[in-house]
Image (cartoon, rainbow over all chains, first blue to last red; front, side, top):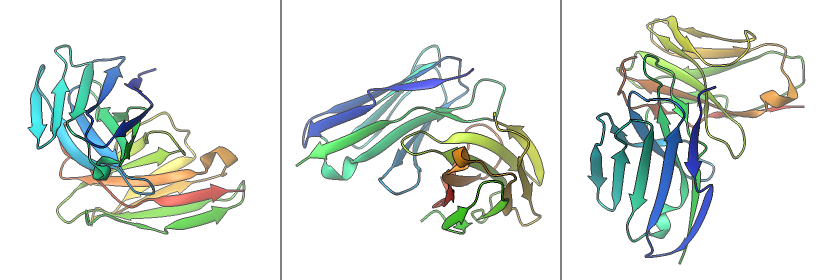
Amino acid sequence: GQQVMQIPQYQHVQEGEDFTTYCNSSTTLSNIQWYKQRPGGHPVFLIQLVKSGEVKKQKRLTFQFGEAKKNSSLHITATQTTDVGTYFCAGPPSGTYKYIFGTGTRLKVLA
Amino acid sequence: ETGVTQSPTHLIKTRGQQVTLRCSSQSGHNTVSWYQQALGQGPQFIFQYYREEENGRGNFPPRFSGLQFPNYSSELNVNALELDDSALYLCASSSDRGLGREQYFGPGTRLTVT
């Protein structure tokens, strides 16, 4: 079936270090969305990418959508303790409205 | 705060029972999607409702059913509960069923089946 994998599964970084999570889909996606879920919370929308090769920035966060629209990445520069949480990518396979969520990357930031 | 509310917050049921979970979408949103999130995993798409009709379904059995009302609030019903149904159930509303609509999640209902 259609799968979206993320690596790494877990990442511990020292505050101030950079962090990157990678998202790989088994099928072409119409768009990719990124969410952050704090422990005990619900997913919160961060951003959406639609075009092949698109790059978007939000302050310290940089998001990329691959040329084949099957992979994406999220890069955080100079992590802060407020960045702690699990980051999910999600996207609908082309021709569907079903958003498939990735396996998630859990980020811990050590002060 | 997203404006999406869910009830109840927590629920404990026995295997074989039935449960109804409720979701009120954000004002102006006509689309509601339901997800199941097991501990330590990503949300799994159950189904989506757009203007009171089911608009897509994930790999869940028919004992998972839903409704959307004229005010766009929604219910998720699960019959013949199984232990594996224990999870956080999330609803998400969006302004349209179209692609590229950001989803606003509610706080979820934690269901425990014993």
